[in-house]
Amino acid sequence: MKITPEPQKSILTKILTKLNVPTEHAEIVADVTLDADLKGFSSHGIGRFPQYIKGLESGTIKTKGDIEIENETVSTALINGNHLFGHYVSYKSMQLAMEKARETGIGMVGIHDSNHFGVAGYYSDMAIMEDLIGLVIANTEPAVAPIGGKIPILGTNPIAIGIPSNKNYVSVDMATSASARGKLMEAVRRGEKIPKNVALDCEGNPTIDPQEALNGSILPFGAHKGYALAFMIEILAGPLVKAAFGTGVTGTATPEEMCTKGDLMIAIDPSKLIDLNIFKDQVDEFINQVKSTDNIFIPGDMEVRNVSKHQQNGIDIDDKLYQQFIDISHKLKIDLENLFTK
Image 1 (tube, one colour):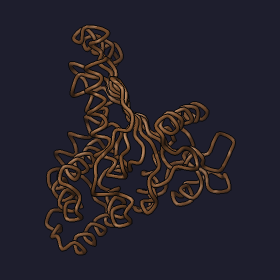
Image 2 (cartoon, one colour; image 1 turned 90 degrees about the horizontal axis):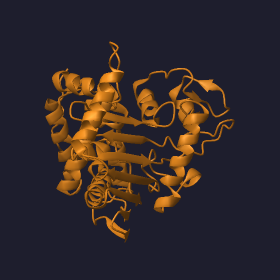
Image 3 (tube, rainbow, N blue to C red; image 1 turned 30 degrees about the vertical axis):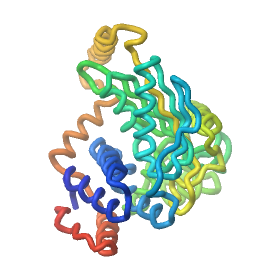
């Protein structure tokens, strides 16, 4: 089954508003979710949506109230998300970070008591579109064992960086683990195996079974290098922002539990350091150097290709995910079947 971009946004917004999610919140969730699918991050796109429904039903995602600024300076802020949708909380927090960056050169906003926010790169993209540099990090509930261990303590702890350019989309959005947890969850749903050298089972043995991997641990990417980066992100997105850390993080993959993870949104205004046009020209000059050999990709190129492909051909929906949406639609008395195509 397939679905095209605009119907997908419409479906998700309609379902959420039917569940008493404020329209502004619902539209942001739908937009972030679509962004993930268009870029090819299907593990964080529409496939995650049933998890959000479970969070709403369990009361771990709130529909009333708003974010709260607990501490603030001219360049920093600490946000209590009050367990609203993570997409909405993160969107508002990056907006605040960008406002501060325009004023002081840098804006840094920490978040606690939020929820899963989709793809980190959506929020760094917000900065790019305002000619700012965006940096987003987050911790997640344990999925990665420290090097030499087999008990998960660290999260998959994503990092996204976006840089403005005149001619190119310059963005990296990745987990610090060998695979995002969502890709394993997606593999379980689809009945697929995972690649070798991605995960260990609960006994510490290599596995290509995604369920055994979820019960065990995901390897850090690049061995000790990914482990070290995840370790540092755990602190910057945990204790620094008044959020949980290590084994205390819950709710990013188990929607029935309150989400205790943290996020850190940073926006940097390059014009406070150098003429903006010179900066962007030099970014493009560097990219030209990198691409002087044929068939060289820069961070962001694959996403651009995927967006074009999915806008033209639609977004794939596997049979189990399709059935989940049909079940949701029947429960809410919404007709969705005609919006999916084969």
